[in-house]
Length: 148
Image (cartoon, rainbow, N blue to C red; front, top):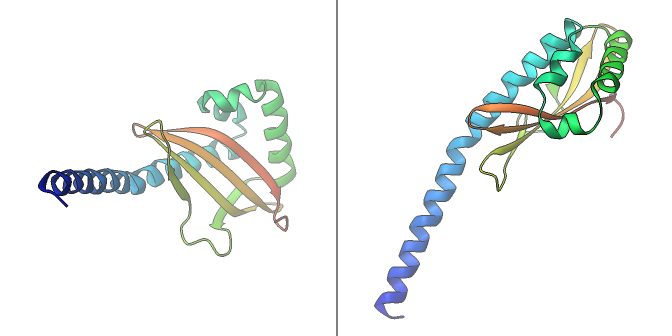
C-alpha cells in the first residue's frame, strides 16, 4: 500500500469515528427530550387536553387525520381507561426507549410501554421525531396490554 492510500484510509477512519462519536453523543439527549415530551403528553391526556396533544404533534401526525378524529379517539380512550398512572418498558427492553439516527440529522425515538391507568392496563406506543432539542409526536397508539 502506498503512502497516499494509507493517508486516505487514516482520514476516512478519523471521519468515521467523528461521525459515530457525534451521533452517539446525541442519543442520550434525544432520549431525554422524547421522554420529557411523553410526560407532557400524559399530563395533557389526564387533563382531557387531547386538542393540545394534536396541536403539538408533528405534521405527519396531523396529516394522518383531522383534529376531530384524533379528539374522538383520544377522549374515548381517556374515558375508557381513566387517568394515566404510570408506565414501565415492555418486557425484554433494555432501555425505556429506542433511538434511531435518521438521515435528516435528527432522531426517531420509539417508546413502548405497558401503562397503568385507573381502569386497567394498555400497551402504549409513542414515536417522536427529535431535532434541534425539540420532540414532535408522530404516532400515539393504545392497544390491549396482552396484544403482542
